[in-house]
Image (spheres, rainbow, N blue to C red):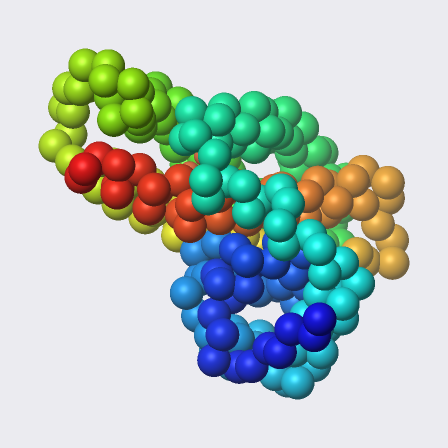
Length: 245
Ligand SMILES: [Fe+2]
Ligand SMILES: [Fe+2]
């Protein structure tokens, strides 16, 4: 079956329905989690990319694995929220808790060794990473200690008749709005990191540590995009609906 793609389709729709298109958006530096509501025409225009080239890459990905739409992520639209929350915490929060300390050590090491020739780029990388590190660390804690336990308790109330949890923040919409705002800000820092490193182009004199730092930053970008996508596009809308029921 051929899936026809046109420029009016949104990035969010495609990633939600066909998770196998995600690597294509990653490859072109298109943010599918925070900026996911954009159409393909808008997203390609922002990246100075020709729409037909993007469409052809997407169609190729869909032809290569047409059946994948029914598996993995698709299930998160229907799975109990307690399972989705556990998946986010185990896989994505778990990843950040190992990647951030690795980068906290790699970033200053590379700046020290290569500052003489690449100080301009590396100082910006350090500044951006440090801002992201501070914000993400407190963000994960707020989700794990406040918002996620509330979502799980609301689901237990609606599904199993457990007592309705007390909401110190009013409706779930309030902390969710704050989390989305922090996601936007993390997405902007990731985009800026990509810009200052010219899409993580390694200089010819890069040593293995420099290479490892760029690789880890790119892994972190891909993981955060998927993490934020699961929260913004699946968990949060479902939690808001449940909270209002
Ligand atoms: Fe999270
Ligand atoms: Fe989050």
